[in-house]
Length: 510
Image (cartoon, rainbow, N blue to C red; front, side):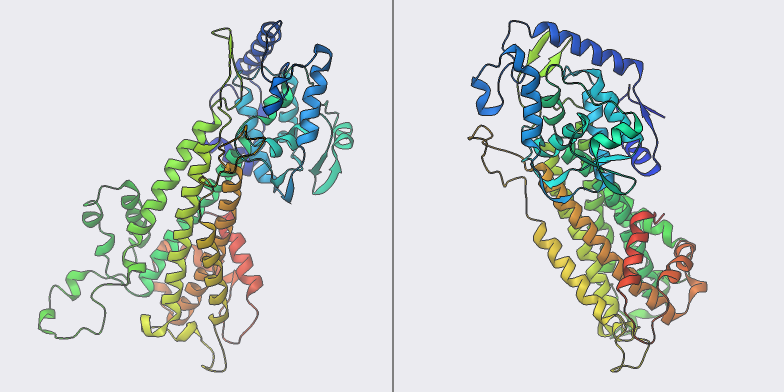
């Protein structure tokens, strides 16, 4: 059971999202919520506080009568439940809810405790509010996406429960869940934050770390296939650059290849036995960059993931609301903590890094498929009759097409601000857009790596030197071959490569 008294960690999200760990309010969280609510209730008397007794955005110039305060919050929720596009997948919505719950439990928003209680019921019962990908612009928070969450919290709108689209009120009645209460500023507090972009971003990072490990796995196996020299992975070479990511990637590859009988020591081939007397070397003295420079290419990806992880966890554990209710100083502070630039920029950087990962996979794939480059495999790793059969030729087109889409999608959202809201929101982050596009790039990249890995498996069928492979390669090979058997006679590959993609998304390489 995850207790929300302490700051959330990345592993907490993993346990809740992928292992269905339940959550609960701790005593400290309950106390913070109650003190914050009671303070705001008293402090807001005879004062003008944005979103409590004023309109919103450009309408903040208008004072709201006391008898209309609750209606004000309900109007905000209902009017902004205007999302469009694809419905967010449950895992991303669950991450969004956990992120929003955590920031509200910091006691900086002045909400009634029932908001937290109902959110916990949604998470623990796997009730997914229907939230759309297209909505907020990432300043004043993810207003539209979070409005759909608020709509469900008050017992309205729709949810997905046990795989079915259901009316929220009906599901609440069945499970005896009470809608959250609107008392002071609960509508604004739920909506006014970065939790959609952050929740999506954290799931993106979970999948990105998995994708990176599979990229390391594929790169390592290709080094075995081509019987590469091993000094480009050496500690001595890679420690001469000070980048932690590069050193980590090289170490992972060395660990993978530690007991391989296929990679070669340069001392045995080019530094001895009269090698200097040759005037031409049929075998390459150095590998192509897509094989030799993997630590230098995936190292920045690794460092980017770690930095993005740090920033997003900081955001999750921050009060990203406006105004901020501070019980300690007995004051209400107006500002812009809802602005999503931190997350938007990290998602842009992550998207670039993952796109480069897919580009590396596509180049490695091309190397395996082009017999004139590798000089050890038949064209397109075709084990049928050349000319009559096609091997992996058709699959390459899809991988190239998908990589090209990633390159196009790598354009920045962080700098694509469009003023809106009567120019009140005159510079915005587009954070949720950036996070959603990054999600697409990650999914695309799993497709590319799946095609690469399918080709690697075919190459290993052809070369037939399983007994020389590293134990790290062999540990996955039997399972992978069950998904995509040897190809001699041509057959449709879309289902097998699709199944391989799902396996990679849902299983760790190491």
